[in-house]
Length: 110
Length: 118
Image (cartoon, each protein chain N blue to C red):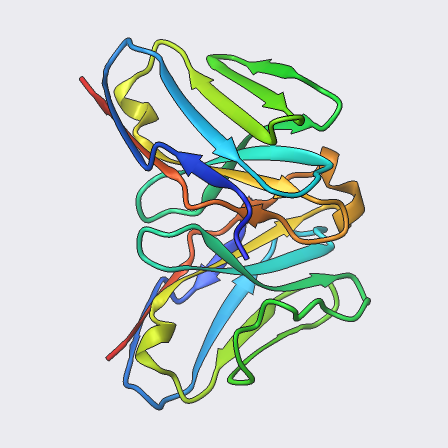
């Protein structure tokens, strides 16, 4: 069963703007991961945040985690057309395979 | 190769036929996963292999689905008597780590096999 639920389902922004995607989940986790998928390709790992972390940065990516609300957000700053892709959160419960959400389709318009 | 390789990239088959999908993981990766992705949906876990341990088959949707892996190398996913509902992209991923050690070793995905059952 799917645990992570991303929102919004689709997001369209202008190049240079920031994009924020949210993920909610239901059960306790060891870590939460974000992946990116370009059309017709496999998923690529972007960033992992552990359950005892609240915020993490990697380049133009910023991830936050609120375990009390069981939610995470992915912020992409200064977006580029090349950021156009689907973004998935995946929750890691520790002893089970990663559970993926349905994803957010991001379109960045040049 | 440097990444996870899946073949074929596309497969069209008639309802009722059997299909076999192949995954070549990254060399040295002990963990291998199969996921299914229906159009516009997230990933649905199918099966997980870790070294010589018994595979976790808890995600296989029916007994028409089976998978094998020889040691830490190639895996094949077999779907018998295919149905139209089996149409999806089948993604394989590999990792250096066991499930409990995944903090430091994320999944590496292949580009998938797009299966169409007519």
